[in-house]
Length: 140
Image (cartoon, rainbow, N blue to C red):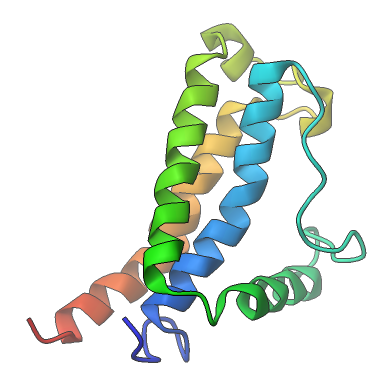
């Protein structure tokens, strides 16, 4: 779990922290929808933008710095809790509200379902190959 070769120089724990860090935004959005509220502020500084590569890189560094020293058990527990919270929020939202573009103004016209798609794509499109490669190279 601490070999620095899962994704470039990241350990598996670093990748777990990275996924958790970004997933926090999705959890906040889903819980806001379930509660009829605005999403909680982003955990990273407002000056960091999600709309540019440079901003995303800066957010990734911010997430890394806050999670790098955390024990893997804590990161995995956090991940489990995030998925539990997302499920609970999704169960509280109607299918129509989930799928209707523009229903939540703070999603800039996107349907809430895109938040869920983003969580899945982040792992499966951006990081799954790294994890598979790491698992194949990891001794039993």
